[in-house]
Length: 79
Image (cartoon, rainbow, N blue to C red; front, side, top):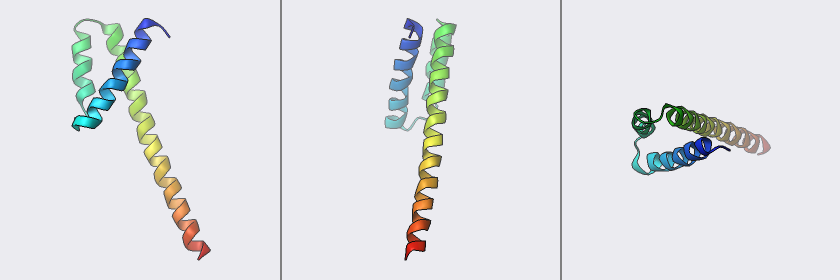
């Protein structure tokens, strides 16, 4: 990974953790705006990292819900 990608990834991970801790689900937008003032490249890399992480989190929750429903249905059919 390049320095840019490393920095964006670490900042995205820290921002996601802060969003979870504070309940501020738009914190990444504020951080992105701060970055835009000084480095468009870092802003774009950061926003990409955050979007990918948010998408993965949503997909994982969806998958977990589907698996839980399937297991519940299987358990009910077994009885």
